[in-house]
Amino acid sequence: AMKCFFKRPPETQKALGTALAAGIADFHQDVHDRALFYYRVLQYDVHVAERVVSPPKQAVSVFADTQSSEIKDRIFDEFNSLSVIYQKPSYMFTDKEHRGPFEFSDELGNISITPEASSDIVPAQQY
Image 1 (cartoon, rainbow, N blue to C red):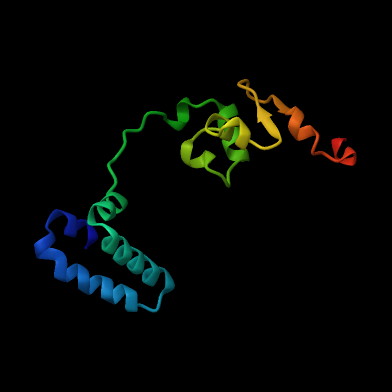
Image 2: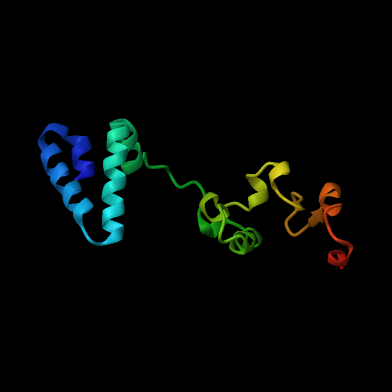
Protein backbone atom coordinates (compact mmCIF):
# COMPACT_ATOMS: atom_id res chain seq x y z
CA ALA A 1 0.00 0.00 0.00
CA MET A 2 2.91 2.36 0.73
CA LYS A 3 4.50 2.01 -2.71
CA CYS A 4 1.12 2.43 -4.40
CA PHE A 5 0.52 5.56 -2.33
CA PHE A 6 3.64 7.19 -3.76
CA LYS A 7 2.53 6.40 -7.33
CA ARG A 8 -1.15 7.45 -6.98
CA PRO A 9 -1.71 9.29 -3.67
CA PRO A 10 -5.33 10.46 -4.07
CA GLU A 11 -6.59 7.02 -5.08
CA THR A 12 -4.76 5.01 -2.42
CA GLN A 13 -4.79 7.34 0.59
CA LYS A 14 -7.89 5.74 2.12
CA ALA A 15 -6.57 2.20 1.55
CA LEU A 16 -3.22 3.13 3.08
CA GLY A 17 -4.97 4.63 6.13
CA THR A 18 -6.98 1.45 6.57
CA ALA A 19 -3.89 -0.75 6.16
CA LEU A 20 -1.87 1.30 8.65
CA ALA A 21 -4.73 1.31 11.18
CA ALA A 22 -5.04 -2.48 10.87
CA GLY A 23 -1.27 -2.86 11.21
CA ILE A 24 -1.11 -0.66 14.30
CA ALA A 25 -3.97 -2.63 15.88
CA ASP A 26 -2.37 -5.99 15.01
CA PHE A 27 -1.23 -8.12 17.95
CA HIS A 28 2.00 -9.24 16.23
CA GLN A 29 4.73 -6.94 17.51
CA ASP A 30 6.63 -6.87 14.20
CA VAL A 31 3.55 -5.87 12.19
CA HIS A 32 2.57 -3.27 14.79
CA ASP A 33 6.07 -1.75 14.85
CA ARG A 34 6.37 -1.64 11.05
CA ALA A 35 2.96 0.03 10.66
CA LEU A 36 3.77 2.53 13.41
CA PHE A 37 7.11 3.30 11.76
CA TYR A 38 5.43 3.93 8.39
CA TYR A 39 2.79 6.10 10.05
CA ARG A 40 5.38 8.20 11.86
CA VAL A 41 7.64 8.65 8.85
CA LEU A 42 4.62 9.71 6.77
CA GLN A 43 3.69 12.21 9.47
CA TYR A 44 7.22 13.60 9.43
CA ASP A 45 7.57 14.06 5.66
CA VAL A 46 6.07 12.26 2.68
CA HIS A 47 9.23 12.74 0.60
CA VAL A 48 11.40 11.21 3.32
CA ALA A 49 8.96 8.30 3.58
CA GLU A 50 9.23 7.72 -0.16
CA ARG A 51 13.04 7.63 0.03
CA VAL A 52 12.85 5.17 2.95
CA VAL A 53 10.28 2.84 1.40
CA SER A 54 11.43 3.06 -2.24
CA PRO A 55 15.09 4.05 -2.31
CA PRO A 56 16.73 4.51 -5.70
CA LYS A 57 18.26 1.30 -6.94
CA GLN A 58 22.02 1.25 -7.22
CA ALA A 59 23.91 -0.67 -9.84
CA VAL A 60 26.05 -3.52 -8.56
CA SER A 61 29.66 -2.53 -9.10
CA VAL A 62 31.54 -5.32 -7.32
CA PHE A 63 30.58 -8.96 -7.44
CA ALA A 64 31.59 -11.44 -4.74
CA ASP A 65 33.48 -13.48 -7.34
CA THR A 66 35.84 -10.60 -8.08
CA GLN A 67 36.81 -9.90 -4.45
CA SER A 68 39.95 -11.52 -3.17
CA SER A 69 39.51 -14.30 -0.63
CA GLU A 70 41.60 -12.31 1.87
CA ILE A 71 39.13 -9.42 1.81
CA LYS A 72 36.20 -11.83 2.13
CA ASP A 73 37.89 -13.45 5.13
CA ARG A 74 38.50 -10.04 6.75
CA ILE A 75 34.84 -9.08 6.20
CA PHE A 76 33.72 -12.42 7.66
CA ASP A 77 35.92 -11.80 10.73
CA GLU A 78 34.12 -8.48 11.20
CA PHE A 79 30.70 -10.02 10.49
CA ASN A 80 28.74 -8.19 13.19
CA SER A 81 29.75 -4.76 11.89
CA LEU A 82 29.23 -2.39 8.98
CA SER A 83 31.86 -4.31 7.01
CA VAL A 84 29.16 -6.61 5.69
CA ILE A 85 27.07 -3.71 4.42
CA TYR A 86 29.96 -1.78 2.86
CA GLN A 87 31.60 -4.99 1.58
CA LYS A 88 34.95 -3.65 2.83
CA PRO A 89 37.09 -4.30 5.89
CA SER A 90 36.50 -1.67 8.58
CA TYR A 91 39.91 -0.05 8.16
CA MET A 92 38.85 1.04 4.66
CA PHE A 93 35.91 3.18 5.81
CA THR A 94 36.78 4.34 9.34
CA ASP A 95 38.96 7.25 10.36
CA LYS A 96 42.24 6.48 12.09
CA GLU A 97 41.06 8.01 15.37
CA HIS A 98 38.02 5.69 15.43
CA ARG A 99 39.82 2.42 14.68
CA GLY A 100 40.67 1.58 18.26
CA PRO A 101 43.91 -0.03 19.40
CA PHE A 102 44.35 -2.05 16.20
CA GLU A 103 45.41 -0.20 13.10
CA PHE A 104 45.38 -2.07 9.83
CA SER A 105 47.92 -1.15 7.23
CA ASP A 106 47.03 -1.14 3.56
CA GLU A 107 48.50 -4.60 3.18
CA LEU A 108 46.07 -7.26 4.30
CA GLY A 109 47.03 -9.21 7.34
CA ASN A 110 49.36 -6.65 8.93
CA ILE A 111 48.09 -5.55 12.30
CA SER A 112 49.99 -3.09 14.43
CA ILE A 113 49.22 -1.53 17.76
CA THR A 114 49.42 2.23 17.62
CA PRO A 115 51.80 3.90 20.14
CA GLU A 116 49.00 5.77 21.94
CA ALA A 117 46.96 2.58 22.25
CA SER A 118 49.89 0.57 23.60
CA SER A 119 50.15 2.95 26.57
CA ASP A 120 46.63 1.88 27.59
CA ILE A 121 47.63 -1.78 27.78
CA VAL A 122 48.33 -3.23 31.19
CA PRO A 123 51.77 -4.97 31.22
CA ALA A 124 50.12 -8.35 31.84
CA GLN A 125 48.07 -7.92 28.63
CA GLN A 126 51.08 -7.33 26.39
CA TYR A 127 51.95 -11.02 26.15
